[in-house]
Image (cartoon, rainbow, N blue to C red; front, side):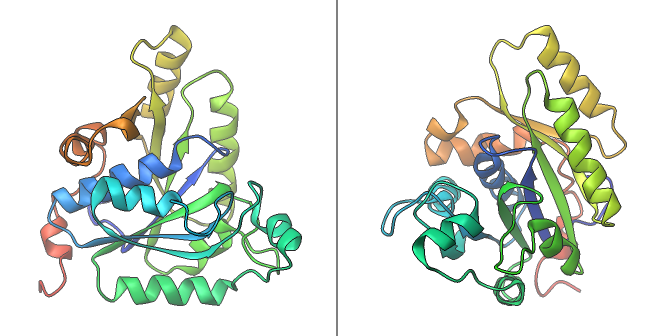
Length: 240
């Protein structure tokens, strides 16, 4: 990461939906746990999953063993506001999410927050977004998950501009699904991300969610070499 101290909250957003936010969230959690930190994960709004089904946080918990929590869950596989309208539900407020994150932060060194869709997808009935949530967290930084293929540079730069415009700290980019046999477009995209001021934090290999939890936890730190945890000991709870 660009700065030596990891923030207390790491917000994971993506250039779009289905770019690998959940597996990157899990990889971040596993990497930080491997560094000796107490870590929890939180998803403000889970859509496209019925009650009792395993959602994104369930997958993170399965792969990492870390504590996870959801703000709310909606059945329709769509953006939170229209999904809530279909079910006649009221979405939790931004304050609710901030309080939930604060509750987890009181017991953990780092809380990893996974967004829904992209940065400006609305999470509340008032139209507030993940960007608004990140901006309201005093000790936070954002990880941007991108695709490897053609078109990703434009989507990535648009999201970077939106983050910069709001004064939100960008920790770096992660490619959410890196192919075993990348083509020249994918390798040049990777090199482009690496040359950005905040840099490329790493690449998660395609098929990573299919690994056993034990293998996932062992290999995750190797995928994210840019996650600076060398000073993590000073962040552990109770350490002066």
